[in-house]
Length: 358
Image (tube, rainbow, N blue to C red; front, top):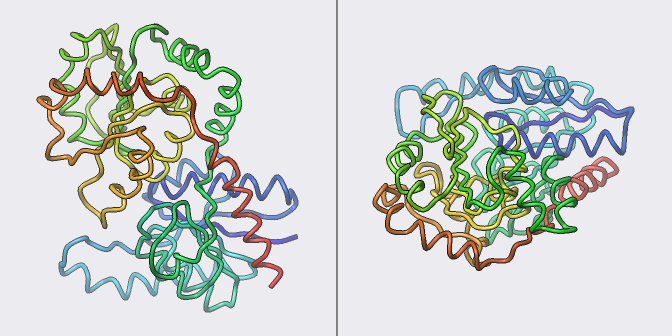
């Protein structure tokens, strides 16, 4: 019996792939212990226990994006987090990391304990935590090809899909047209009316929300229905017959399937789930970070399934001038999704099994 520790928290982009791999590991090794490392303020505090896994909390190493006096605390916070991770990892057989603030101290702790490390990078541009971890291991996997650095030789595994998305793909493969119409009905919309699904990532987006609220007349003018995920911390607009605003969408697979147009950020998980089930997207990459969201959407743009726009250009005027054209482009794309990420969790588990045997 082995103990497998998963590190990856903060956002759904780190947590959902980790949960998918943990589920696959338990399916193959039901007697093994799988536990997660997280912080008290990340989404893992709800998502991990809800999935039935044990979560251990460590202090967060907060790093401001711009130079500030808070940087002086980083070494002390890192030492505290590494010590906490060492206690959790004591006796563990392997660490599987997915990036984010949680992963960096976990990688350092695992290295100090000589525990094998496996790393999966979801973004097309690797984040700093996984770059640090890659110094300690050659067992690397990626969702997208990486041109340079240690991840350029990594296993191209794809991005592990949530179980509901994978199941929806399998069911829709028999008849995509029927599946998309049924998904609209389950969401409470008319199956023959164009549906636009809007979301700004797991936390929502104030910028995207404002543009959508100022464009409701345009959606109504073109006879569109709108499902708008505003984020749990943002103010909830009033809903109507054709406009439904919710804090968070529980039926994500149906939302991707039923939408004729998805308007969203282009996080790694969003792009992967859209690739599996979606039809056409307008991506508005997060304007901060290392530019990974712009790169994440590139393959979908090349495939003719998406368009990308800078946030500064995403306005109510843009919606007014381009909405009809976006819906036309959607109608002219393939009606089916893609199954290229269906085996990603299995590939990462196989890599971890290999690392354990070395």
